[in-house]
Image (cartoon, rainbow, N blue to C red; front, side, top):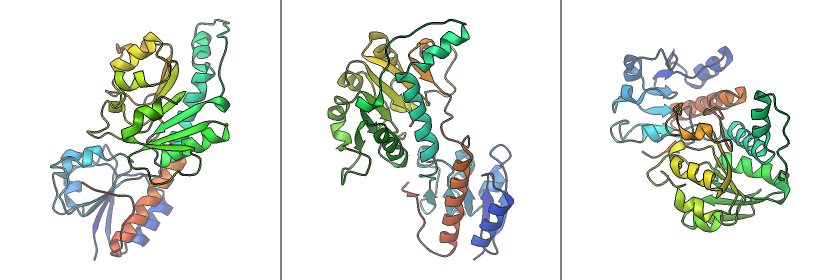
Length: 313
């Protein structure tokens, strides 16, 4: 049966042709995040892309929404989607981009490159002294999905001992030495020299990293956040840095975003901040992966088959 499809994800002409082939006879409308209207959203039976949640309004017409993000927190709130609407994310599309970005942040910190860049901006020739190596570090990854596993493999290639933390422990995946359940978070943190959070935004994960969990870490540990900003109590993070409990932090996500100009994190020389740019389409391959997921899922749905990346709401 022909469907009305709305896409706000950029596609090449070849990709548009593939989508048309996957959904023969369907009426496909292309727009952009800025140009999309509520009328377009309300008329769609299938949507590709993160349209404004206010436009959906539990549309009874909407059958499937394929997000261009891994996170779906805005769409699982009561009152957004009709209970019959299928929801799918783009998990897997961001693994290379985000893991490599966070790995680069981590290396920059332990090699003190962030400090040398500060000195360059002031035309100063300063030696910052000793650095450290990943080859003798224990790295704890909290959130062992596609991004976390990609990060783990890079750490292992550099000789690190890798601990993973996830909701349920079933097996130890390749590239990981130990796995703990979320309930044993502090036990895992106590072993780590470097901690990476790739946690989503949920009621259970909000401020998961706070004074209590920072205190559980090794003195001088490095903390990284590439998941969601609200997983961290930022006041507690600043205090942990100032007190020396944590030596450094690398943040690609904050609360709020953009981070206000007067926020104390900006002034901390050992907090390295990037403006939530690890994901999105900064790495062109990420967009290609998202489009491939979307085209596959639309084709599966049109043919009455089970879609991938489905999320409960």
